[in-house]
Picture (tube, rainbow, N blue to C red):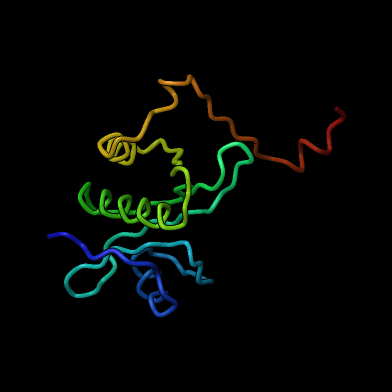
Length: 134
């Protein structure tokens, strides 16, 4: 059965904490939730608004939790709708999750690893890096 998708509201925080299995300290307005027929949260997608001087506004998928591909796609379609309404030029996602990658591909996203030979790098231990001579 399809889920109902909507933006997270402050009253959802106890249910979101239960769904995620951890406490949620703040309400961030950049979360979509999937609700079942009893209004229980069965999926969530958090996103960020980003800006590029060359490509204008966009949105980036941060974290997604969904029980199946159907709810996952519903959350992604809802994010695309939000991004379009906010006049974003694209939605970006960096993932190692094969289910998310498959859903993005099914929805028509380009895999930039293949099409543009993109590489994704991450630098951690910033303080350690800065403490070393350059």
